[in-house]
Structure formats: structure tokens, C-alpha cells
Image 1 (cartoon, rainbow, N blue to C red):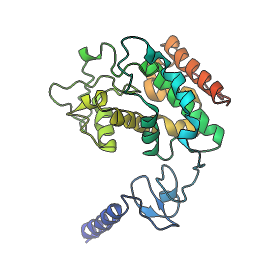
Image 2 (image 1 turned 90 degrees about the vertical axis):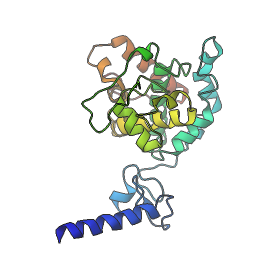
Image 3 (image 1 turned 30 degrees about the vertical axis):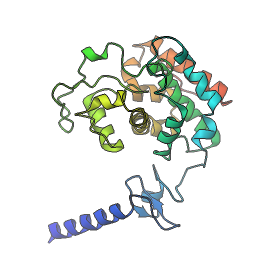
Image 4 (image 1 turned 90 degrees about the horizontal axis):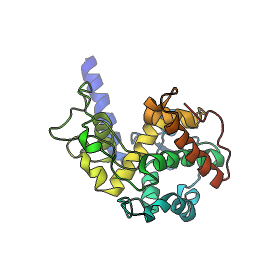
Length: 264
């Protein structure tokens, strides 16, 4: 009897999930992170997609990431041997941000500016200011962790860094693919071929690994740990300094204080 009741509940949930995929909820309802319509913290809190979500401030990503701000980051694309030219363009980042409605939209307007500055600081560091699409020398590394049974590595596939945040490891490719909509395990190369998917995967990774810690007030240092913890605790001070310098520069451009806890 208990098993039948559980199955019935799951079927009801599945039906509700399907009906809410386009966030076609009633005006007073929220569409939750997982696509359910309802009210209360389970629906309107966290990464609520639409409706009267709690904590979202209405700040628009595109209003902060202006052409001038973005073009300043990609100035390096003018040099030779810069495959990111034409791959990383502002409109694609605006579209990717729209796929994660809580990105840069929690807290005050200054909080939004800080989160966006933090994201682009890591992008600038990881991709050479949006010049590189793939990790230098990455093709010689598989980055396959066979302990992650949920994300088994596909034959002859390598999961080295690709995209604006240099997504790495089979478990990150698999989870990103499931969330964004591509076969991350059997087709990791798509992150170096399809810019829209590549940038959406980077924003997804940020939301999964950095967003919560940053908006909770843990500082920029927590995002370094979320992206590449092996640099922390004094092991790669030059790499940490590079990220921090970019962050402080972008905060300066956006006229916002960078806050405490800059290093990890």
C-alpha cells in the first residue's frame, strides 16, 4: 500500500512538472528551480525561475554588462591567435544569464554588480580575457574520474577545460549536459564548437558551485575555492592574485566595493 501511495505521489508530481515546464503558472504562483508551480519557500525561494520569487531584485544582467564593460574584457581578442574572437560575444552571455534568473539578481543592486564582477573575473582569468576556448595543452589529459559512477567516461573522450570557465572533468560535463541540454559525456567537444551551449554551461557551473556562497556573503575567495580549490590555502598565490586583481578591477569599473574575504 505504501509503495502504491508513493508511486501515486510521484505520478502527480510528474504531471505537475510537465505542466510547468514553460513556467505557465498562475500570477500568484512561482515556478520553482525544478519547474513546479506553487507558493511558499519551496517554490519561491532559492533559484526560483519566475513569478514572485523571493530575494530577486529585478536588476537586469544586460544593464550591468554594457557594451563598454564587455568590450573592455575582450580587448585581448585583437591580438593574433585568438580563437575566442566571434565565439565570446555579449549577446550570448545575456542569453545565458536569462537561463538562470537568479544569476546576478539576488540582494541589492550592488550585490548584483559584485556577483557579475566576480563571474567575469574568473572568465577573464580562465580564458585569457575571452581569447581561449580550450585549455592549453588540455588535449593530452583525459580528466576522467572513474570513481564518479553516475557519470561514466565515454571511450576516446577527453574532459579537459573548455569554454569561458574551462569546464573540466567527466562529472562536470555530465551534470552540465543534463542541466543545459547536451550530451556532455559522449560529446564534450561541443563546448568548444557551440558558443551558446558553452556559455550556458559556464553560467550553470557558476550557479551550482559559486552563487550560493557568494550571495551568502562569503566573499570572492569562496568563488575561487568553488572553481579551482587546488589554488587555495597558499598553494598557488599567483593564480589567486590574478583572479583577485581582475575582480577588483571589474568592481572598480562597476563602481562598487569588492567587499571582504577576497582570497581563499
